[in-house]
Image (cartoon, rainbow, N blue to C red; front, side):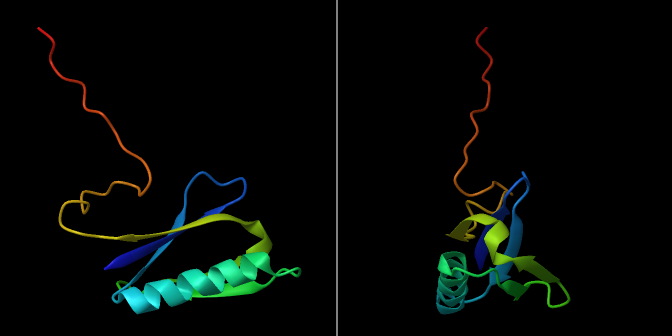
Length: 92
């Protein structure tokens, strides 16, 4: 499963949709990038392969970042791609 996270301006929480195949994730990534590069604002309608009833619409001029990541067994713990955490150990 591949997750596409879209970060919007003035919003700390990314919008996420999933694709089952790498090709589908890459195609969506490229279409979002193309919309971001466009001189005019476009309405993007995104759907999710994991949750078919999940739909989201957003304006391309409000996108500040897009991230594609593969959800593997090791990263399935709910970590946000691009961030890490350090667990505090017992120093006694």
